[in-house]
Image (cartoon, one colour):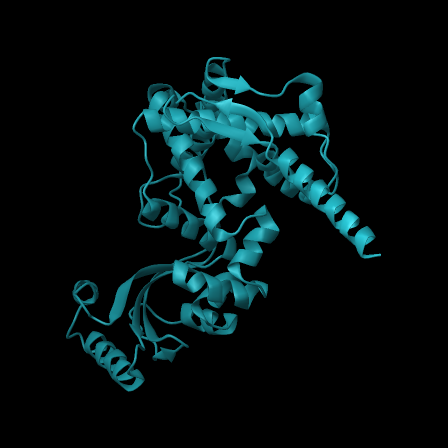
Length: 363
């Protein structure tokens, strides 16, 4: 019986070793950078394919898996070309890009330190678990992927800078976009306001007193809005101050920590009115009411925000221009990748039936 168990164990070990060897099979060697060639293995293709299959709810065909393999090869070619061109992305830029993306997704501006807590509160899971669910990667791997994407994008933009800058929407495209989206160009009821926020920090009583002092100085005319803004920028000021354009919406009320009825009351106050101090979990704050603007439909020549010079036409031109430029960048990236994907730069180790066999794994 012991002998049989030993034989079974040896068979399982051999199967595991064969499986591991299959995963490590080299499919291609990318050698644009002669000093640092890179091998693409079955395991690397699997790590890309499995999240796709999970999202689609089906297995990818062999031809689709070949497309994934080709994408990996092209990415490595572009990254090697970017390195040769002297392009590098600091980790701080990757961190900033990551936080901006997560803030947009969560609908609130947060620091990276706050991300885990916010995700746990809003999603009921850790940040790593959220990323694993969405893109099949943890935070470290996701940031590494972002860094690669940013390097490739910068390489393409540098290589095709003149062509990208020349891409612009026509007048006809701008006006057609306005006509088909006219209903979305509206002002809600808006109000200029001046907001002062005093962080609680370690001494809540001191923060409350500071908020009261600042409010009284502003109310009594002993300090102006501009002077408060200047003082807020001093080192260790303990507070923030600045203009804020508020829209009368449920979303804005929630972001401010107000009930919508409270925001409506705020809009009902006269210009120059200073609110009582409101306490939140993190700070004490108060508003000074400014000029109000009634809701209206915007014509193509109207400004998109009060007291600015950017018209609806300018806004559409800018957004359409960005879209067209991004489309051009994607097209240019593919053209550059195609030009680099040559036998001189890529040594395909497996082809035809041998490649099909390695990409026909069962999950």
